[in-house]
Image (cartoon, helix red, strand yellow):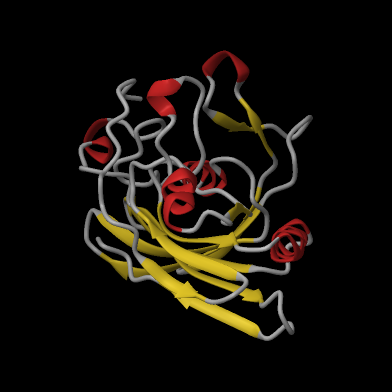
Length: 215
């Protein structure tokens, strides 16, 4: 991975805002939360808090992943949403472009994941000590040498979609960690959080927020 951090300077793109939550479209290349060191201080959380000082973290997206990310605006909303993520009652959908075309049209990947310590931040499949991880996938379009996929994770392990697609034999295009050869020669990681469904902290109404993939 490129060691230099040069996050995009896109203005905040608010997808939904009310008295309890704010949902934004995170650009690819921007950290969700600060990293270690002053050079990694710039992130979506700190940018949001400039405009919305009460914003509180609920979940994260990988630096290279774009798309829908929700923040709480009250402590109540943070507790409520965090519990929804922990209990896996939120529904997340991602769009990815992958190398190669699957022979099947859809499926479920059930492979436990754990950090590959000597090669951090890489993650790997490990049946002995890995944490359970499940992903539903469906091919949206055959693009010849590549394919467009819709991915629905049941769990939220680090790099889950990236490693699960790799294990399927179809690495996500532009992945700076896992892609090699022609699959790595794309301007960004082709992974986008397209939709988040959650129960609103004020009243429990099912709320859906979407952001179309920019690729």
